Image (tube, chains in turn yellow, green):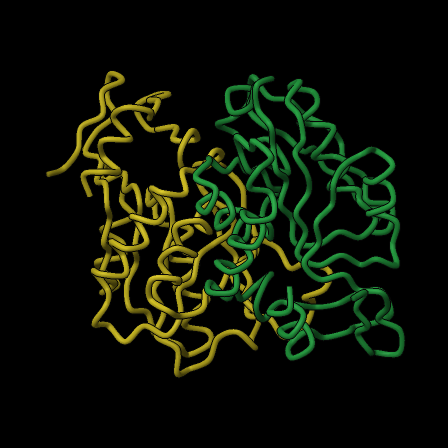
Length: 190
Length: 190
């Protein structure tokens, strides 16, 4: 998606060979118009897949996922990173471990918001090592729901997330695929 | 806003005299169409206020805040509940203490995403005791930016949030104002 790649070139900041900061238009400050266009693109790509719900992991994926759900005319479900005090019971949960960050969290979804008839499109901002994405997939499968695919804004293609997901037979559609951030330069896969 | 009140009556669950659960259409599962209508309503109400940015606190406020920002054609800024590893420097921060929950967190915003020329509309899902809202206001004022008002989906009018904000001369526009949840019954202020 050229619109996103152009924006990454213009405003993305390469912090080192692995980290791209996009907090002026995706993560912290959000450009609503860009999110709308991203939503249209995902909705168009996955339009014939029989999707019943869009799901994302809080909180950076919410904006593009909401716009995708609006375009597809289906509900959005936000997977939570830790159970809230109100939502204590009747949850599916799975542990997501980030080996690079050395952290882990419990990813949860209420049983009342997913069922085995659901065919779910997962939307997230980044795909790197695939820890969050594979966690979301485990969680959806606990509900015996099926996965239509994964829509990603920015894929760090030099990390193994896509490969893991393709090995698990999940379709990954990434709007910007980054081959390398070496030397402060952003190289895309065309 | 009748659309939201109707939905609360239909799907809201009164857990006790103080807690209303709306996680089937606002907090956990999200209805994108309802969020769009809410965004239009806030944008219309605040249209003449010279707003430069919409701000919200992650993560339940993101969906309605994004739709409001889209309608107003301004950026959205998401205030973070704890500094991320990428965003370590150049932050404004303020501690938000929830006396009822007995918890506290650091609310932050990057200095690069707010300036003294900004006139900010804050959007959030709930207003109860006003701890989060007054924290957001403190944070915005640290940047010497100004506050255009506060747009709230659900106000628990039997708690002191609105009063605190009105005493601080902040306009509060709530789409659904709940007078009481006593006895499992939802009573609105008309």
